[in-house]
Image (cartoon, rainbow, N blue to C red; front, side, top):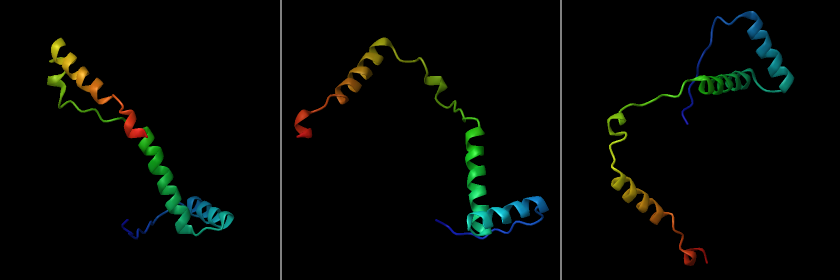
Length: 88
């Protein structure tokens, strides 16, 4: 993990006061509260971010014949078999 210092300036007074009160209420440092807020914000942004769609394989979609699909499915079925002796 890379430790990096970041200085945040020009915060609204209400924000600064809230952070200081939260630090005092929880017994944590102001820095710990700001780190927590950043992580929480990242999680919210990640949940709200649209899932990126890729189209680089679109040309291959639907190109298998029924025979190709059957061969592939048989290979998957073979890999799905469990060897009971491995679990003893």
